[in-house]
Amino acid sequence: MSYRETNQIEYIRSIKKKYGDRILIPAHHYISSDIIDIADFTGDSYKLAVDVASTDAEFIVFAGVRFMAESAAVLAKPDQKIFHPVHEAGCPMADMIDEKKAQAVFDKILAETGIKPAPVVYMNSYASSKAFTGRNGGAVCTSSNAAKIIDYYLSQDRPIFFFPDYHLGRNIADKINIPEDQIVKISKDLTFDKAATKDTKIYLWDGFCHVHQTFAVDDIKSARERYPDIWVTVHPECDRSIVAEANEFGSTQQIYDKVTASPEGSKWAIGTEINFVERLATENPNKVILPLRISPCFNMGKITPASIASILDKIDKSIQSGALLPRNVVVSDQLRSDASLALNKMIEIVEGK
Ligand code: 13P
Ligand code: SF4
Image (tube, rainbow, N blue to C red; front, side):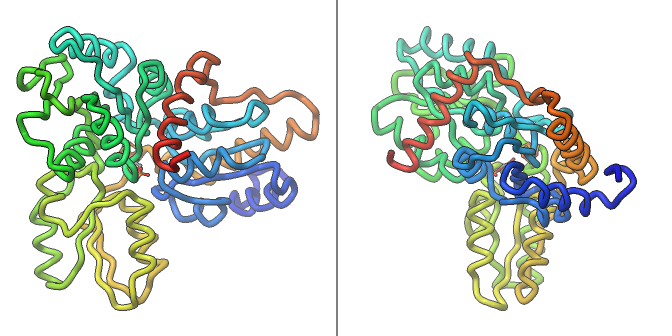
């Protein structure tokens, strides 16, 4: 029976059963629950990158946005094939900078200060941005390890060019007490908000995630009016005013682990993507779990059971017929080799390897 004529979740389960470990479906926490239920593992962007790289599956159907599938393709073994179900499931933040603009910023910093900054690129970026970073001795970071990566370069007395998310960079700069006059914000026309000097510690590109920019300080106040002892945790892509008002910030996986480990009856207000917050509420029925506001990532929402079933159908047919199924996430050898320098540098700094 064709996957079109049957329940797509059932179809996905049947193909997974048929091929066992040969096919792997990793899913990001923001993906809808019906897909999370059939996924082999879930995680934030760091956990997924590391976990996928440690498997031997031949076919990896990545349930996440495109930059995540690309990162998996960079780290994958040569015979592993990564598939991304919907090409259009991109990330507007990743689109806010490209390699050319990153190079122009790097050159401007060098021209104005005589110092080459260490590029630190957020995982939420395309392979060409990661490749630029790798070529220039920098590292990728994710929201769970950005502080560690930034610390690493600052402790070597190297200023940092951080992109594309301004807010993550700014929240970490606040956390590690970088003074205001040592933080330079760079707008899209390459204007610096203050003069770059030899003392500048961090240059922040002005990118953002619209999903995390919807939260307001009043959302936190309303949650506290309802439950005075509620614990407010938010993603570091939120504005610093939200982070300052919240009790803490953390990456998706950090939020997941804390809420899951908290005692029954604990109360949480969470400022991040709604699919994830709703799933946490379902998985923790004896705790109060409120979203600060309903804020969906429409791009994650483009990954549906039908889109995954359609890729599995192609994989099934190619295995049956012996016909080659071309990869649909293709990263050139040069990009792969440069981007993997930056991804592996992150893993080396975080894992201490
Ligand atoms: P995490 O690094 O927390 O998985 O975040 C991914 C993301 O897309 C947040 O917007
Ligand atoms: Fe991109 Fe924001 Fe969606 Fe994350 S939540 S994938 S940063 S748009």
